[in-house]
Length: 179
Ligand SMILES: C=C(O[C@@H]1C=C(C(=O)O)C=C[C@H]1O)C(=O)O
Image (tube, rainbow, N blue to C red; front, top):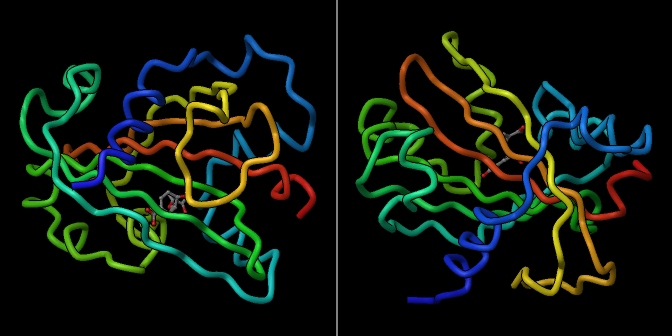
């Protein structure tokens, strides 16, 4: 089993997550980091060819720092994807989907190359917790693409579909701010 995703996952969990109000963000950064609608839909509206690359879908024990926010101890599906616009990587997303959420909302267990957002933003009982933002050290990220910047901005939030939670982190490549 590759250790890459869990290494990145552990780094993301310990990053310095803050409320956006505490940070001085540029307008273009604010626009993307604080987007409340689907990022997938926004990317699709800004490019000719949208592509999702699946990196990982693997069950792990839900990391302890997420127990209180999600469903306590137990297994969860770690899903990692890259979202491309016209063959340029724009967003790396890492999501934790607890087993109980997958059991209750079965399509989440077989998304495959369907973007998570295309499903959850259509759910009638979708709710979203606050968005937190962090500036990440790219030396701590093990992604299958060249990272030229020393830091990248990321955001995280918890979504609930009815009472079933999932946790999503999105890391924004610098090219996204030029879309
Ligand atoms: C949550 C959304 O779904 C996007 C797609 C994801 C996936 O397919 O795993 C994960 C996070 C998002 O970047 C969205 O579109 O906003």
